[in-house]
Image (cartoon, rainbow, N blue to C red):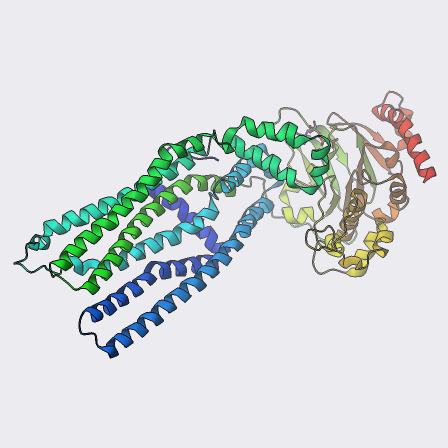
Length: 631
Ligand code: ADP
């Protein structure tokens, strides 16, 4: 948990909270309305009963008129019931809205993540800030979620103070008869001493409570490692897919538990446990004790004035009730200010994440829609280093894509193939050199337009737990025939015929208990179908058959021309056998393009990288061929 060591001024803390409230208001105004209305009812509602009860007691102690008593009792009952119903209904509403916000807060971060340029998301700094923010939330819900409570807490306490003043101000105006021995209670000094004492206690109690709560904030940096270990290992360990690994290697006993033991955040010997037994606990206890003394002082002052004849017994109920609530309001107000301040430093991390800038240059040119798909892309002396890295991932790459051609990109792991694709799709900008689309630097195009010309199947593609058809179309409304056709081309046709609900079959079981679990290979076919459905001029397949069995792989190759159609296709693979049908093969080695040509041409060069890779892999092709033959 990141927390500023230096204490923020109240104004700075308020500014941060104000910004938090604005964000919450923009996303979920109903939440703020529900909480604020609830604050009004909670702050002022109890005074209705206090005021009306006092009138009833006065009537009972005075004239005891049955008509007036009946009237007062009915009004008191109705008003109290109305307040209670209002508080109950608003409480439920606020609770429901706050439950929604628990998830909506994730949407705020998702919106940021999806609007952030890829290079930024991919950086270590972004990951650090993001995980810090998530840990703050896990740590007592610090950050935006907690901010939701503080505004109503402030409003409620202020209203409680105002209501209390309204009902108790006459306590100091009503005089004890001058001949009474307690007539000194009429003096301004007595009022000031009494008020001062009450105020002191009202301030002391939350002060002690804040001191006690402050230990959580102090503990946050110490629990950082423990929390991170907890969230990384424990939550991952709960994922079904991980369970097999966990059992086979007894990872929970051998790795996770010893690791948790080594960071004692959650153990009885932890600092917070020790503090709770010591000063933290003492401050919490003293805070409660001091507020009990407060009630005693109020009773003493009010009862003495009543006994001396300043007012009747009904007013005793009113004053005691009102003053107790008034000072509880003061305590709440101070506590709210303390909470606001404590949360402000956690909000800093949230805003640091939300304020991460997009620095990629955004051009304004639009890519004209061309039915002839004549989009010429060229890499001109492109070199690239990942942010924060000292080594070149790509070096002096020159490449021109022939429209409608099939280019294979091959090379060993780490040779720069995926990086090359990331630059082509402008997930990153080159460190040196430029990439041109129809002769113009791609940075000058609107990013949204530019990426529309690419359909990509990344190695780590994602499918959603949604119906199959929606996954392929990337939309809720789609052309069913076109989706079926793409699935057919991607080799998923057979499987589709066995799905009772066809395109409406949910993938995975997260959202539908009748959802189907599909294998890695089948998922890859769905991802290929999705790329085909987008029907972009460029089709990029990054190791598209890595998860497929040899038969399915052979099936895809057989249909490759049909799949690629008139698109410019880039096919990345470290399996050279799967690239033979491409017009041109580019061989990557240590970030550079070391050879280019057709399969036959490249094999001619016995000193070349391609020749070396081909012969190194030849033995596996034989095995693969045998497996294909044996079915
Ligand atoms: P390939 O796709 O050929 O396996 P990559 O393009 O993924 O290779 O990687 C090329 C080089 O860039 C490798 O040395 C790899 O370690 C490095 N690299 C890849 N991704 C990142 C990243 N996000 N940050 C830093 N270095 C990276």
